[in-house]
Image 1 (cartoon, rainbow, N blue to C red):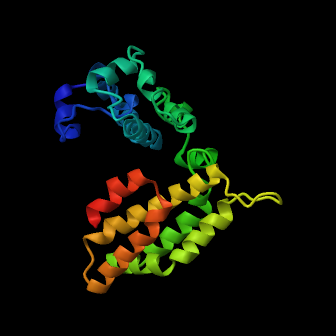
Image 2 (tube, one colour; image 1 turned 90 degrees about the horizontal axis):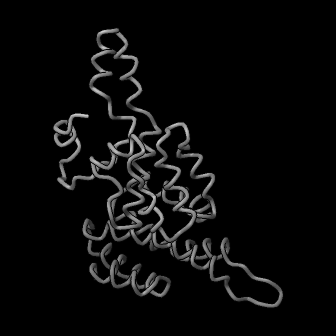
Image 3 (cartoon, one colour; image 1 turned 90 degrees about the vertical axis):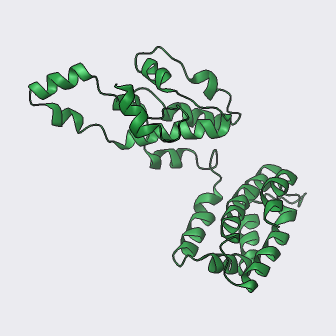
Length: 240
């Protein structure tokens, strides 16, 4: 609980946010007693669990979706003793599935936090589109096995028709009376495409060959009709 240790080890960015799990804070009086009783190593060994990582991840997700920090050091110390409630910030998350997931991830009781695998299973088709699991993950894993910016751009450009067909075939909802694409499923496809767009953009400035740069521009041209105008303004135009 020594603030000096927190600022030295965990506040390099000087943002004064604290996303350490509450159980990571070790009371100095208890520490001295454990050292004297030869039980310190057993107690201290618990200060590194997957539940702590889940808590920190939940804090990061909350900030991403609310654009404000969830905890400062003072608030975290109060949270340990039920003196601070982060839910007013968490409740600003619009998506109800993500809001519920974040609330679970930052539970004060580590035994009530789920594992990462459990969250992925629970949120299939909710916070995480189903195409993340059935198409996107295996495809991206295959690309990254031989990762180089030029190869990624080449692969995405070559497979673009396959990518679009895979997303649409999986997510389109049609019936005998209508061939219109279900809006919710179409949005899900766009979310998956956005991941691939981010992957392509991350490679743009690292391309070594002129041909790869031309392929990258052509890839962006193909993606533009399939994403929102705000995405074009915020993510694509800065690279063109």
